[in-house]
Length: 368
Figure 1 (cartoon, rainbow, N blue to C red):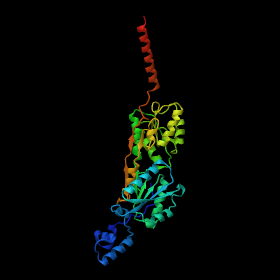
Figure 2: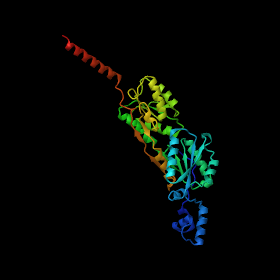
Figure 3: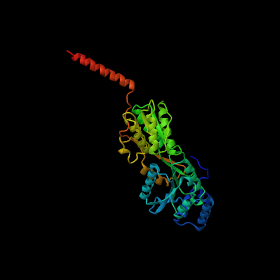
Figure 4: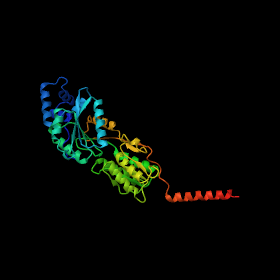
């Protein structure tokens, strides 16, 4: 991810150097604490104006009991992931006594955020969190923020699956690449070697990252990488992918699906074709949707902890290094939709033939 480069945020040390005084003196002026000579105060205020320093309101406010607000920008996505992240942010903000001011923007107009920023400015928000499922959205939002003079110096957190640092923003993410790798590695440990993938929309960062994790896990074990089936996060797209997989010859013995909702559609398609999960084909999803444990069979999946993600977003507003990136590791939840692959057909024929032969011999031995 990239955005238009700009100069780094001025600090109190920059002000101190220009004013020719100590960092502690500048801090007293900024926080209006302690006695400072009027001439020194004037020099500090002039230096602040010259370098364009803005006090990090969030870092100060989150350490006190002063009420404040966090501005959150997201698109109109209905998906479980972004909605779960928003809920996590709201819970985390309440824990530190913050209000959340939410702006939901249509995807086609995500870059036109001036009215949103005007609302945030009037509310004196202490920081901004941008939930950006698409890379284009993150870039548009950050460019709009950079062009809003009032926002200069505000801490900004971008919640996105991509881990590339952004200028003057902190990137927060569940490590979805690691989660995808762990999902596929689980299937490999069970003995699966032919593992298909139903990918999410490739305009979404999540779709790209999860596909990359699946592919790299297979390549690391020198296993074949089949052409992925591309869905759009809906159960219907999972159903269509399931119909295609059921018709393959040979069929994969396992499928890693990029979302639980698509996995549900895929499992329905396989069931209609007379294929059993996991006896005939193992299925593993991603998200740990609240209904995943109620699937038939209960779905093995990768759980995203959205409350922990929200806490990380809020706490990251205090980060002193705006180009930082923070991740949390997802959990692999093993249920009943995965098991070792069925034996090859030729082994079944051999085993069945031996069993028939044993029965014939037993009959002969029992004959008078």
